Length: 515
Image (cartoon, rainbow, N blue to C red):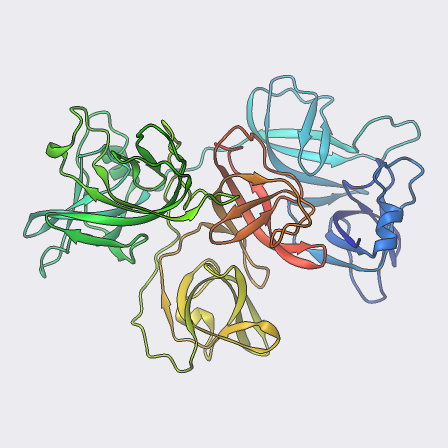
């Protein structure tokens, strides 16, 4: 079976031969890449090295030892560094974040495996680490070549305000609308100030931007004060929402565990939903929830303003779950922090120019090819790659990696799907990081239920554990980065990367260790 590994260039033999460290080789048995003339490789570069089936079996047996042959390969490519890496003399230093305990002498890391701490005194907490590779001598005896050089405290992120998603639930007067959001306690709705054209209709979704001073007053103050927002924009509804009598209804699709007892439901966006219906079978349900006025809430102590009004089983229990769609019936669940990406704009839908289907896509990468921008996208509902071809630069349309849009996509050659617009911008669902510039970006997502490796299971088909996400499909944990499996959800950064012979969504980093 063919194999690809990720490694770091840690030494040079001559202009055409470089040593590469990998966590898949025996300690001190660094492999070697053979560099063609004219190709530049530097100390500290990160590389993906590929091997055919015979090479893979020779260089990477199930039991590694000091007698295992050092790998050699000319099939490699330089990639963007996963961690900041700096050449220092004849070795490299790497910076990373890690949670440590006081007096810890051996640090476990998902990629570097073991990092030895011989001299640095640290306390409990999260730290910025600088680690360094040491040259293993004869009789080295340790399980890793990485040692801790120094640590630095992680600076507290400056508070810069907060974006809050809400839904218009009523009219206070001619110039103000009541708005529900999950950041306030049930029944303690705030308001938005509307323009001279009059109040917004119930069911309108808005994104409100608050300064840090407003956050301190409205959301972090022991003395509750109803929020009031002048700075907001109208969003496309994240869930179908409609006015209903003097209130609103929202349609949700979610996974619910069957139970002989009648129990309330927890949803990651709306929170607790009161339920008085029997749910015997586990599966995916389509439910409608209705907002009730606080004075009409059934509990004397208001725990929720949402009640289940309709419920229908649409699919039996699936084998995998996700956070945003599937819901567990539980006594409690940590809330998801809804922090949208930067401001989006909405453009009117134009008539399609070619026959096709309207699809929702997210921009993964923008590359400049022959004086034109090629916009590589991921179809969120179809779980497949696509291409957006533009007659103008992406920047002219205000497009960047992470933007979500809908457009008409048609089948192209070789099974590819592409669109030539026009596009309609949507709310940007996911936070991104990375510079882009043709290298793509990473996305922060929530998901749950890690599935162990099963090469025979389509479409997962992976030798690594995977986690399913309703927009990105199966995400491969090829470096086993997910920890703390007792938690119901995982918070992570993902990106597109080569796994074996194909590009897959892979986990780059777990956020908060299953917070």
